[in-house]
Length: 92
Image (cartoon, rainbow, N blue to C red; front, side, top):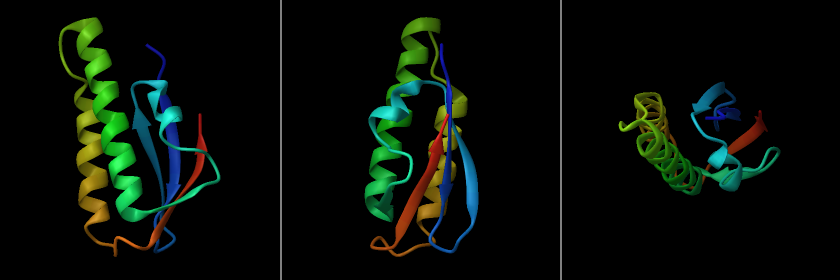
């Protein structure tokens, strides 16, 4: 199953590489775009859930890496105001 890494910049300037076990992330984020924190959270939560379900359909179990990445993002977004922005720097 093809995977993707998306690099983001949080509102405080911190950059982070994030993992998706599926290229479905390309349908939810665009490199170079900035998203409100709440929108970014919704988009990544949806994409990573879809990715985990794709793995489950193929292998019989959810992708724990996708679920863990979604949990890390959820913890991080709690530190910011929903109206601040997260920038998707790249997706590979």
